[in-house]
Image (tube, rainbow, N blue to C red):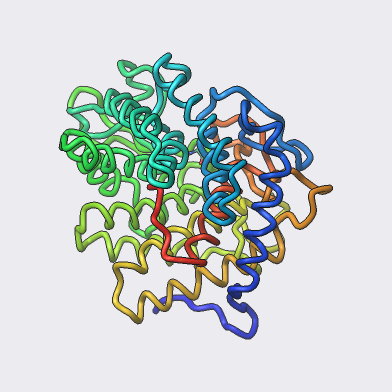
Length: 391
Ligand code: GLY
């Protein structure tokens, strides 16, 4: 039985609230544009405020994506100009291979360059994004049939995929469509199949990362990196799974992904605390002294809003309503409402929380982060119109 949230306790975000929320995002983005046109946002805020950085981190595309979403909302020419400046920077980055030897080419180039191409016909954006797709497929392992996330390609300790990568793959589908060359799509499809077959556990929680045998390509073992421990469900990993399965279905139309989407989503929803915004790992809930990851709520909402395009009407209504309920809580309880508090859009997100059992460093905990802001805007935009997506 699918989980539902009682409407009296959990109202849906209204169209008026969506419009108000997007208006604030637009205003905030325009306000900080002078500092963040030639520079990009750091991945996470410190005490609520982002510092400017060069275009050299895996998260920089989200900021450009926010600029494009704001441009869609207001059609303000200052946003368009800033977006074009940033596309130029992304071209420079891929031509000069600045910090591009990892799998996050989709996160970098879809919301920035593909978006700029789709919205304003930027040829530079198109060219840069095709180059990024070429870069991404260099990380494909034909034996294991997956795209390696991080690190040098010839090291067994790096021979793994991560669940997040599913949302990097729309770049490859787009590249095949634009170029007429199926090589990108073929690799994406192989990776999706390998990832989906291995990262989803029997109870439909998910592994963050999954290792394979370098000689044979056989599945080896799952492990966490950013979750609390091996075997727990890192909230954002589960949310990437929700969105990743929706895009996997969008592009492959494999019917078995519909059920997997429902099950992985149910696991996520069944582990939410009272206000529907997850703690950073789904192992934690109300009463635990642990930080939230508000970005996971917005990412999962985007996944549900994507998937409802392909579901039967009753299921579509179900997930559409839940997405609105989640976004109501994000808007009411987590969104920035005044510029004195923060130069970001959504508070209480967690990037990388060290635990005694994981392998990640400690930073960006209980702060805004760039993708939390971006997917908040994407979810609101999806709710406000029939959105032509960047992914
Ligand atoms: N893709 C890395 C993260 O979600 O933190």
